[in-house]
Image (cartoon, rainbow, N blue to C red):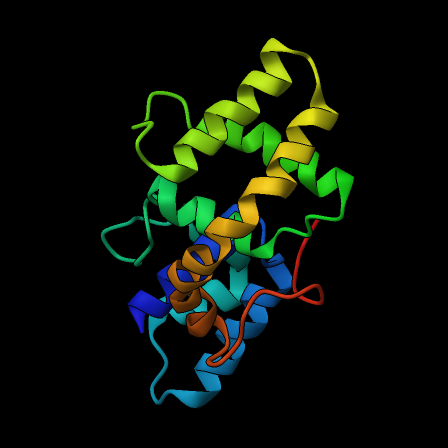
Length: 165
């Protein structure tokens, strides 16, 4: 159960679930488990932000996502047709990829996007490059992000109804 909670909290931290969705998830888990854990009760009563301020030794949490995990979560939920979402992804990716191994395709994409946005001052070109090149990475991103979505709702995947902006 702790592992599921960590993954649901990771979805919230990345901005793919709202606070209400996390609380609703905790409420559903409380009703499904007898007796419910103290961690679930705390999450339900206080929400994810206050929950993450509780002592880590007493309450499980995923301290950080790897770059690849966060990239996959963000990319698999991204609406490539949306300019505001594309701009947000470009801004995140340009900073998050720095100092990482260029041999990794996600990092190489990030460096190119950063070059177009920051060096060339051309956000439209950065978004166009993202739209052209991200689809090749999406199957792996979806596979990497599937366990996170399954923790929230078994059998689910990111979709427009669940995305938080």
